[in-house]
Length: 458
Image 1 (tube, rainbow, N blue to C red):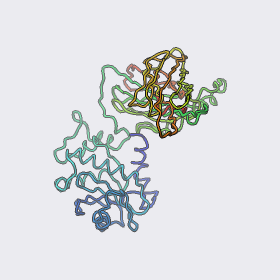
Image 2: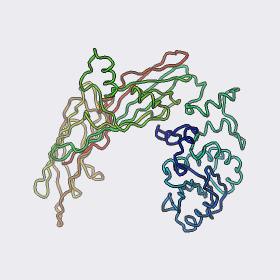
Image 3: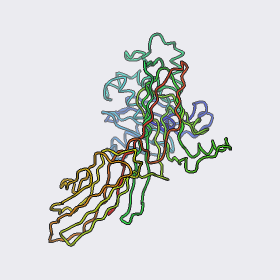
Image 4: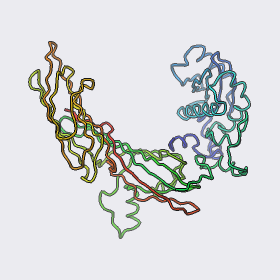
């Protein structure tokens, strides 16, 4: 889950939301549980102006008309119905006016997951009736005045103990601490976590996308990246790291005028999305990423970069059609990263016509052969050093056919992995861990660039 999910679920405190108004149609006015016959098993209304009569409207217009599989959003009069079907039950969110459909659907799926976690079963008529009190209590906790609130199962189970669910705490945790965890900003991490060896791993994983025309012009070039974290830290640590973000470096240069920033040292990062643990206010203020990490592995953030991409490979293809029965192939691949690095599992796919009879191929490194099931020459290089150029030459025999159809010339594609290389130029400038016990932390940062859609037209 990223930060956008957390922001959508709880955009601001309940008191501020009520004061600001925002219109009765902004969020969820009621939640309904109906069976396949349209009978209302359970309903909970959160706003004025909505009665159980809306259930009759949904039954007649959607269930009876057998329209439930076509459109998950239905509007009748001033009421909007957003619904999902789980097991044999329709779970419906009702809203007045222009509803926030994406938030409503995320909430409905989260609500079904909560009920399944408590009951351990798919939703059925009997399950709703047998757990009537429990589901009502859950509905009171997860929505406040139509705004979804806490949908974290572990926290709900700490203080909702219906149907034999025990409180998941260690020892005799005071009730005050439970309240702080349930209503505070650190619902993703429990207290009391201990490790003999405190370690923090950060992996910067980037997918490089490239599209080059047959004339050599770059049509598309961008990087889609994710930052993955493996956290094995004791207590409640706060982690902080900075990237070579252009805005951050510009701010530092303004604050320290005696120290000029190197030109080209910063990169422009677009379309960032964060895990809910990241303090967005801190990031907006000084462009540093501060967070209290969940325990274990998680995706901290994702991003996209469209400028100043360092291409890991350059492809120079020459494919000539010699008459109707022969094709001559000459492909050169040059690695553009430093000689200190190397790529692994490099695969170059050179497509050929469907009526190819045979192909005789010679390569400077690796192995290459024509694979009929792939319809292409597959050139595989296990280890490709940096600042190196390898070439492939081949002659292809084609079966002449009566119906001559022009070959569409699909693009050459590549697959690869380059460890310790970031195509975007992004790097972690510093990484700090703060914890009240002040223990020593082992910190690791790794980079890897993989092929996304890496194509060169021929």
